Image 1 (cartoon, rainbow, N blue to C red):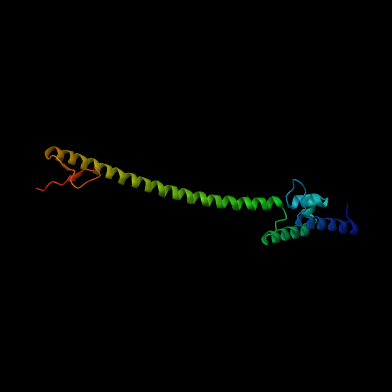
Image 2 (cartoon, rainbow, N blue to C red):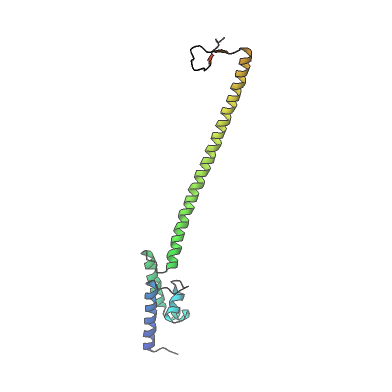
Length: 159
């Protein structure tokens, strides 16, 4: 059955009113700002919107894209998704930096442990040498000039 001009005008007004509501942020509960919701809000089928009112569907999509490009998010869910994507990207970057810093610290830790082990080996070697020398040459200990009871090691002459 063909629509009269009055019916066509009335449907077009309903579609335009639905476009204005959706882009104005009046999104129905549980519905995104999309063509399916537009058809439901205008009271027509999606098929009818695509076939008969395709120019209004295209206008809706263009206006929605322009709103998104200008930073206006008519759909709070889309705005939340955009915020969460941004947060996810920042956290992913921070995690990558933290992981890199952690690996650098692990490498530095291994280097310092190696240096500490080398110093410990040198200290053990020097203690062994010192104990061998002290067996061969007794160390002379003197209290001269020390009023505080601290014993002073007198160096042995070198050979």
